[in-house]
Length: 119
Image 1 (tube, rainbow, N blue to C red):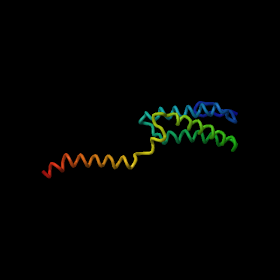
Image 2: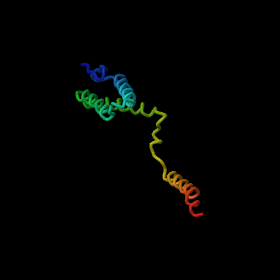
Image 3: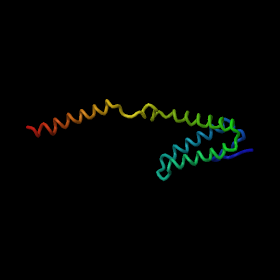
Image 4: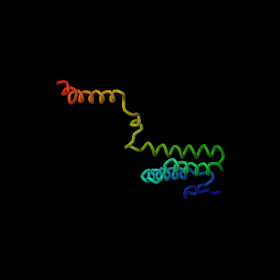
């Protein structure tokens, strides 16, 4: 029995190489969709997940767990390779940096505006 997802033919149970190729294809599609303003990324990703769900619904529980373990693992591996957006950069700005910037702005305002108004 062979099933098809996004043009990829899958054996039952699917081979690991087939699952990895599908995950890489989905990541490539997502990267391309990011640059198209007419595509809503939420709906796009939900459609991908729905096609995966429809396929895995027919698998046995152990096969389904194996499929998702391989598929999710490959997507995570691909996501970690992004050197332009490392995971630690998502932490935000520290409180110290915010207070430092506010202090600099206060000093500039004092010397540029308030001091000249008092003289």
